[in-house]
Structures are given as structure tokens and as C-alpha cells.
Amino acid sequence: MKDVVSTIGLDLVSGADPHEVMLRLVAVACQHTGADRCTLTSLDQDVLRVEASYQPGGAPAFIGREFPMTYLDDQPLLRSAVETRRIVTGGSLAEGGRIDPQLQASLEEMHHTAIVPLPLGTRVGGVLIFSRRADQRFEMTELDEMQQLGILAVLALRNARLVEDVRRAQARGLETLLLMTQFVATSEDAADFFGKMSETVAGLVEAHRAVFWHIADGRLEPHPRAFGFTQVALAKMRLRVPAPGDDALAELVYAGAALRHTVAEGGAGPVMDGLLRELGLRDQLAVPWRTAAGPIGVLAAYDSRRGFTTQDEWIMRLAARASALVWQGFEAQQRVRRLESDERTRLQAHASRMADLERQKSEFLQLASHELRTPITLVTGYLSMLEDQTLGELPAAAANIVPLLSSRMTQMNDLVDRLLTASRMEDASPPPDLAEVRVDQLVADVVHSVDGTGPRPRRVIMGATGEVMVRADAEKVETIVGNLVSNAIKYSPDGGDVRVQVSEEPGWVAIAVTDEGVGIAESDLTKLFQPFSRIDTGAASEVMGTGLGLYLSRNLALLQGGDIFVESRPGEGSTFTLRLPRSLREAAGGNR
Image (cartoon, rainbow, N blue to C red; front, side):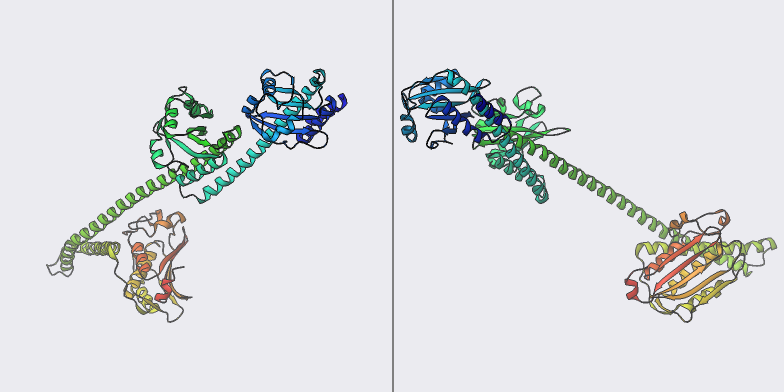
């Protein structure tokens, strides 16, 4: 017998299927004690369950039946064994109490019974029930050895159930995470997500209601799409957040302790208990909802269909932890949106200020130009009269100064013209007067007018591939080319030829002006086409200019669908190239 018992004990602790081992156990126990039937029952979560039973001729039909613990009230022998935790012997279980009609015949055929309690710690985890038809009582010595083996069997069974519960909880946890990823992908906002999540949590723990409570301004408030609550109920669900250490609700919020209880028992704190009773709720399982930075609120489920379990708590903690990460994601999105909104507002205000400044500058340019035009015209007229001696002959010293003054007045008049052009261009540039223009001839005329001019006359060499036609505004093209050639001469203080080349490209006409002057550093190229921008180098510091020529030239080119490009190296000269589209259709295609 000892060998058999040892083998069964080893099977139980080695991880074999506990149900199969228990069937062997009751068979061996039945044979060892000479009983006609041996039944093993477990007492788990207030339920008495028949786990295994053996009798010669076939297993009884009641295997797997479950009975509430109140069943013990109708079975004195069973109740005595469970309450005293001692082996009890007596007659038939059908005597001295009410029995299940389906079990009556099976119990009445047995005349002697022995109840062996199987204690686990402070509780009885199950019982072994031995029955005999013959009028022969059971001996205590033959039952003691069975008690130890039965305890081991019930313990193994309980562990197997715990493992199965963990597996089910893990599966539910994975399902929770999968649903969360789907909710994140399909939810438009935080309220939508937490509404779906509340319903999912309620389903996972088999509860009728679930809600995320959020801490806001020192109060716990439910998310508006809580599952299972009416809007009237949600309007009542406002709780003051207790101070740390005040009650069970404070422990839940601050210390991370779960709260599982029935409303009738209380235990959540006077404020929450009162609210739950007012809402007519039966029971509650609540877990903390928090991030590493601190508490966000509480996740709670209510009105369980079967009673909340430890596995339910684990599932809800997992859901709360994962939902906290989602909450942080929504919060981060809101912060980004707020920053973007603030930045847009700041940029709009800056753009508005810049537009005002541009408008004020344009108004000033127009006003100043118009106001300067009259005195310049007046002074120029008198200088002209002095030059042609209409007002009489001048002394030699004065006669030498008048041409210089006339030259300066011409420069001032040119400056005013450019200021007016710039201000009109910024306000509303007039559309170009486009027509078919023989651009090679136009450029030749410009070159002829400036060739040999300047303080140090030099050659301006013109080149063209032949007769080149372009659809453009002749006056504006003449202004652009004149500015480019004039700049090439001015910024070649040490001499050198200026070359102007007119050529055709696919869809475009190019006019390139090349000098052998001071050149431009790469870092200064971006400043070239800004209004009033001048690049002062040592070699060109004495060159007079307004800083408007290139700015105006490029804008005139853009108006016709073209652009101006520059290539330059310090000390080696520069090439400015005006490109104009051959037709309006090509201009609409964009510059290259």
C-alpha cells in the first residue's frame, strides 16, 4: 500500500493531470479501506464540487455535480467534519436530513459512511467520503493514511485550477491589449476611446457597468461615455478626492491598492459608499489608473454577474495601465495641437505686423518720392540754365562746379524714379505689355548706349546666335538689361571687358551678362535681390548705388514668367543671366 500511495503522491507533485491521478486515488482508497464507494469533493469559493468517485461496476452519475455550502446544513455528518476538521463516521448520508432526490437512491444503499476532511491551512479544502453497504463500521487507522494523500490531491487540484485561471487571465489580457490597439486606431478622440474601453472592461470581468473616473480640479469625475450608466446617473457621479490616508478611496487613488467589496458591506469610504447606494449598485471592483508621473484617476466595474475575482483585478489593472499610456498619448497630441495653435497665432501676428510695416514703407516711399520730385525738377532746371549761361556768364570756378551738380541731380532723379518703381511694384505691379520682341536687337541697342561710358571706359562686347524672338515687355526687358550691364561696368573698377550673350535654350531665351570684376562671395548671393541691399567689399566700396537695381530687375523678370540667376567667384567676376520664356504657355510651366 505504501508503494501505491508514494506513486500517487509523486504523480501529483510531478505535474501529471490531477483529475486522472484523483481517479486512481479514489480507486486505491476504495480498495484499501474495503469500501463500496469512495468520493472526493472539493470546497472552493463556497462551492462543494464532486471531483472524482469510484465504485466497482462503474462510476456514479453524480461526478461533477456542484452544491452550495448551504447543502451542509442538510448533511450533519458532512457539516461536523468540515467544522471540526476531524474524521467523522456514521450511518447513511440519506439519514437525518434532506437530500437531493437525484441522489437519494445512491445514498440509501450505503449503510455506513466515513467523512475524512482535507484541511488546507485554516480552511477545509475538500473531503473524502467512504461508503459501505454492509453493516460494518470504518476503522480510524485505515482512514488516517488516506487523509494525507487526499490533502495532497486537493492541493494539486487547486494549483491546477490556479494555473488554468492564470492562463485564462493571460488570454483575456492579450485580448484586452488587442482590442485596445483596435480602439486606438479607430477612435477619433479620447472620449470615444475610453467609451469603447469601458464597455470592453465590463465584458472581460462580466460586469454590467464600468467607468474611468478622472481626477480634475480635486474631484473624481466619470468620463462622459461610461458603459452601463445613464446621463442622469453620470451627472450625480462627482466625488471629492480624499486626502492621502483618509479612507479606502484614498488608498486606491494614492497607494495603488485595489478595492473589491459589496455595497452592502461598505468599505470604500463614507462618500463613495453613499454614492454607490444612491445609484443602486451591488458591488464594485476598482483599481488605480495612473502613470509614472502620478494618479490619473480610477477604473471601476460594478454589478458583477458572478462575483469579482482576483483574475478580474489582474485584468483591470492591465487595462488601466495600458489605458494610462493611451491617455498620455492623447495628452501629448493635445499639447502639440496647443503649441501649433499658439505658433500659428504668433506667426499670423508677426505676418500682420510685417504687412503693416511693408505698407508703411511703401506709403513712405511714394510720399517721399513725390515730395522730392518737385525740388529736384526745379534745381535741375536752374542748373541747366546756368550751364547754357541763360542767366549770364559764370565765374570760372563756378562754371567748373555746375556739371558736377548736374550729374548729382541726375543721380538723385534716378534714385527717385527707382523708389517710385519699387513702391508701385510692392503695391500692385501692372501687368506686362507682352508682344513679339526681337530681343537680340533690343540688347544690341542697350549695349551700344553704354559702350565706352563710365569713369573708366571699357568695351561691352555683344554676341548672339542670330535673330532671336521672344514674347516679352520690351520696355521692361530693356530696363533689366540696362541695369545688369550698368552693374557689370560699375563693379569692374580695375577694367576688363563686359560680354553680353543672347542665346536660345529649349523653351527659353537667355541673356547672360559677364564681367571681370570683383565678384561676389557665396554667402552674399542670397542678399543680392533684396531691396536696398548693397554688398560692400574693399574693391567696390566706392561704387555709388541705391541697392534697388537688382531687386527691381528680378521683379520685372518674374512678372514676365522669367527669372535672373547669378554665378560668381570673388576676384574672378560674375555672370548674371536673365531667362525669359518663349511664350505664355511655357511661362505657366514654371522656371527652371
